[in-house]
Image (cartoon, rainbow, N blue to C red; front, side, top):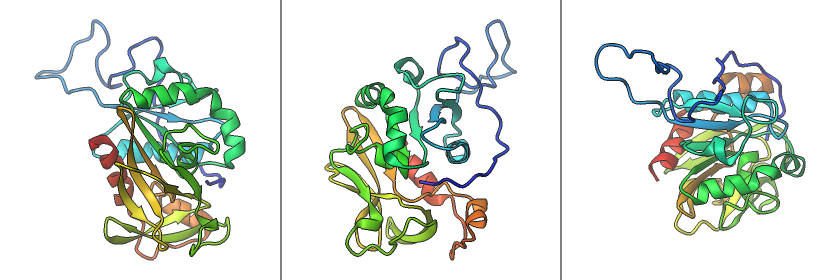
Length: 259
């Protein structure tokens, strides 16, 4: 969860304006003509929540990660002040739904609990959920969308935690057998993921990132912030000892999409 304020100069993802959800913003509209040769396949659509349960910076950093991933997502922001809301219709045809980090769990859930049923049905029907920090908490049960077999709990309260405060910091994790350093601010660990793939563990061996099934769909959640870029560290007066690397974030997205 993160509350610092920054402004990314990212382009608008565009509104749906009554069109089909799937599609690339660069494709010709009705009556238009494609360039010479075979038309490129449409980019997969990622619906990213942006609203009072997060902050603009966290949402846009997730969008940046998704756009720059190997999947080159077309990102569409959804929320109460966006062109589209989080609804069953909005999610229909989306490759994934992403819930960014943000503030406190209880307050955030009050803002998004109206979406819970649509999100659960979307994932259970074969969709994908991607949750970062607060989005990881919201995948749990207390409170949350109930997408995890187990739950999400505060790492700083766990036995043997190497971080004991809510301050922004850097935490080492074992990411697929390699030590990686990630931005961290009161993120969760995850319990009970039968049939899931653990991607990362905290130093006390608790799960920091996992991809797990939910019905016919998949859920990928992470406690730290692999989407954090250099300005996150600069704003907080932090330094990543290994340098800022989007690799873990891209691996998280790949693992979800290929599960």
